[in-house]
Length: 218
Image 1: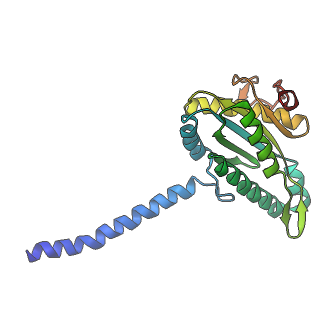
Image 2: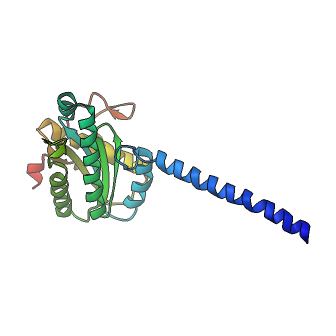
């Protein structure tokens, strides 16, 4: 009996150590799945969670790219650029949570989001709110830096998996670039079929798009 108690007493610290190690590893993995600047999910983590949202019913996928971000970096320095990215991430995350969705950062000044969109009018409303949320000035060391954004969106009316999400992101990306070509704002892609070729999974040369303009859909 005493030998069993002795063995048990020796095992308790070992089990506790493994538990702490396991917790540490889980936290390291979770940290790796989060963008260090904004705290938003990275592309892989976003894909995993966004797929679950898309499986829950009619939704919309958004691709966001900041306007004139390089000018902010060049004029005010990379610290100011980081502040703008951090503020944008916070604004996008708040918008996504309010709309029962998810936001992620894909790198640089490119972000993505997914949220329920049960109708085209609802998508228009969420896009107006998203634009309003993202385009307010950001205060950096007493300087009010103007922030613009180009947004592409596409509705997903049926459940889709990770492969379908990739197609929707491509379509939203093309619509986003169409918005950027016309001075910013937002556009809605009406067809998930990519209009442009790809290079390494991205639009080849990031050419323009023939998607319908926002004003035509309002």
